[in-house]
Amino acid sequence: MRLRLPEERPARPPTGYKIAYPVLSQDGTRSGFTGVSLGGGSPYGVLDDARCVYGRRHRPPARRCDCGFHCLHSLSEALGLTCTGAHRRAVVLEVTVLGSYIRYERGLRYARQRVRTVRVGPCACGRPPRRLTDAGWGRPGWRVLGPDCGACALGLTGVTFAEFARLAGGQLKVIPSQRDGPADATVPELMAEAALLQARLDWFQGQLAKFTGREQL
Ligand SMILES: [Zn+2]
Ligand SMILES: [Zn+2]
Image (cartoon, rainbow, N blue to C red; front, side):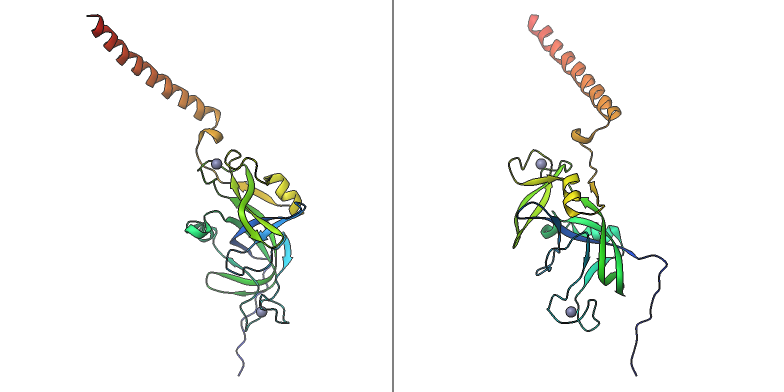
């Protein structure tokens, strides 16, 4: 008796989430992504087919192999992976799963994918990211990029989010992480901050006046 997996015929292709590193080709003309696991395979583009990492002559996802693209069902689980030390500077991709796939409890293993959005975490200094710059390592022919606020990695090779999307050759949405901070504050937030500073200055001047008043006694 042969056990067969139940077949699914979804009305629209499934969506999944995964972590990856953005990469820029050595000549700066192409961008893409590379997997986070050791031997994460060769870099892939916005729309790409998986290849068997063991070089076997089958099309991923082969049942007796573990090759193919992988993703998780849940965005929060993918975001959670970026808390681990090794993956702090990885980005979170939202992908459309194309072609055949095998469903697991937490995610899918599949043949073909289109990257839809890239969520970029904060710069190492904690400020919101503005660019993707040379992270200091890579794969042959590819530099891995990391989030940069625009001030920390001055002088290093890098691209803006729009440039990265253009070089990837696809309709890619790049979403910078939203963190409160002066760089990203709205006008009402800045006015509230100014009011607070004014109140502190008033208090400070009041205290100072007491001292100068005493000294005059
Ligand atoms: Zn394989
Ligand atoms: Zn920074």
